Image (cartoon, rainbow over all chains, first blue to last red; front, side):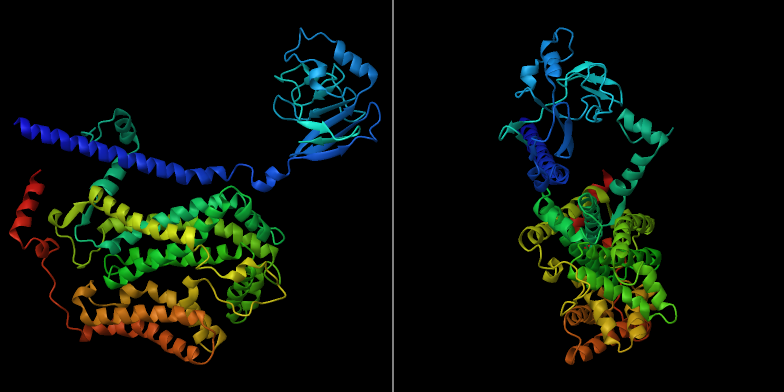
Length: 180
Length: 416
């Protein structure tokens, strides 16, 4: 009896091992097949290649703004007036939802560069054109759900959780920037 | 509520209200299947696998494809070069079409050899021929989408077949095109139909399976199942056999996808469609070649089209052309001999379809076409009168369990 039951246990252990390893291999195989089908929805090589844009700011007068496209999104560039710069720098960070100083956000204080997408639900805020509503803080105002941004693109009032994002960019010369 | 066969309380609860689990248990688990099926019975499930592969890879391709004459070709090249794993998905779809036809053609020849179309499985057979027809339409329209030279000229030639119809032919062709040549409207509707027809195929496949499960599979000796001693439960006996066959199939399929992805294609289709220049030698995809050979064998435009469609139409009525009550070729020596002649005839037609329509090829095409119709229209009805058939076994179990050792093993299994 002992010998018999021992061999039975062994064969059951062997069977469990075979079943578990079969299912494991099948699972790995299924995942390997599924991955290309999922990954094809990620950005393709040509989409990733469109990652940088150069902008000439020499004709941008004080107080004017332009919107350029980068990775299919609007990027706001505004030439700020001295008063706007002063306001942006002097305001207290205490009451801000997402406290950041103007120096952290704007390396060249004359030109502010922002991703023009509201951090709430992705609408494009108003404030680029001269006639636009600029919100209570004079920067940008999102018409979708009423988020107010200041001259530094910081969220001051409304539902947006964070400040307008800053794209990675660099000044190639005094008046030319490369975004991305 | 009768005693449920399920232990899991959630499954039990659902099954009482929506008996999907009972259905699956009945049709995929207990489903009694003749115990003597050989590997030719794998090709039904392989065809189902191919259909699902085509639908999944096709849905994924459609996410990256643009159905417009100016962008279609480039969008396919973008899939090949830029889209993540796009080359793999497209090669799976391209070669999947060929393998789907390989599997389905073997499935059809298996049905012909073992007489699987005979009563009571006539509708099962007819639904199968309908699936073949839908597959051909779908494959043809799919081949147009990459908008290469073969796409364009294949579409032009095949749609022009309809111009052979007397009186209304030209209007029908204009209607098919949505213009006066194969153009953007044609490409758009072909994309739409190529997307939707596979789901129609799925619907007909479901009917095909319902009809199959009504009387169960035919079997190599072609006699009816007489009781449980003749059958095995589908699971695990045939699930495991189907899975093993699937492994073999995938080995071949993967070899093609990874090592010879363009073997069954035509290089001219990597040249963008040009409505001003026809390629020197137009051939359809290999799975249409036998029918293409029949089309060209007939020296009359309308006649050629009628014979080509007739070659498929005749398959619909085979259950009534073959009057012999014996299903399997194993017991019909003359039928079996001519089956292989028909098989070679179809291969020959396929070869001739790929050759230029001149000289000896035309003559051979005519002979092969004549034989194709002779086989179904003359031989099938005539054979039962002249053929001396071999004696049928009493049951499926009888020839297997003549040895006593296996018979007693069988008795033990039955008791459990």
